[in-house]
Length: 385
Image (tube, rainbow, N blue to C red; front, side):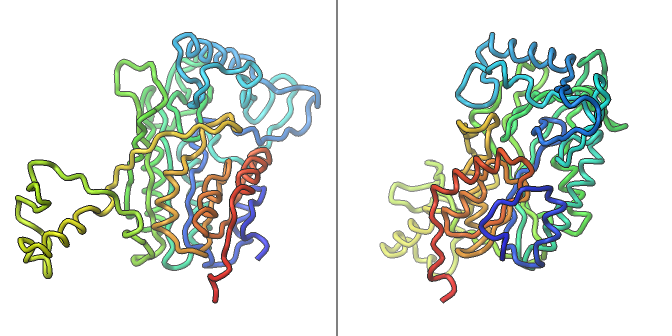
């Protein structure tokens, strides 16, 4: 098939309908978060072709915030750098829909710039309805989403969205973003759960909310709440029964000293049944120790954010993608990412001998992804013997 093991440039809502039904085993993705970033995919029609369509007020606000962050030594982009070059500060600060300077009209297919959360959720449901169609009946969706706060004060308006919370792909302040009718300044928007519940209503099985705990979160200068140090990773399935390999992602047991004897036997009542009833024998003790070394993976995953030198945003960490690939697919299966970014999902899929299909709107990100993928070898010689 022409799309397998490739990253396709284009809008997911236009590319996904071209993919045949039921060929994907797992979809693992992190869509653009609502109101946090402009990925620079817009084109302009009419107006002055020499105009840069820059919103000067928004640019001044971005400069003020970046300079403030540099003064206190915070990392402005989630990476190891502590300075932001002037040429990157204005990236994405463009007039929305229409340029006030020259009258040009902005055309853009990217998600995340919708006027309200409701519009964003509606588009997300449409995308993942197509994803559900291309998934096999026992397929799964692993969906990473971050949140944002309704803010106030930008450009003299109390109807703006604060994008200060760092995300896995970076963030920026999107000024002039209209609030939903029930959102007040400083409200947590709740985008991840809005999307999760909407997908559930659309037919998905909402199976798990995994907490991605970040030991190195983006610093925040807030004093009336905690610094945000987590995001959500939702596990959704197409059917009630689905493929999920729990064994391959088991984690090391954490044995509390008060619960265990020095020889590896448990002080409290054992929940091990059958052949391990005789655990006080030497053979039983050894068997019990082996089974207690690993446990079913818990729903909080502590994974640092991962700087990536070739992109101005922080990419999805490979360690976040690995358990999704391993638990959600077998060798030779096809893994899909409809918002491919810098190609972390295809990169990890290829590393574990899965096939992949990526979709990405931004050609610059595709170049980064293809360069990464060239470093990995996909060997499926014996998969279909």
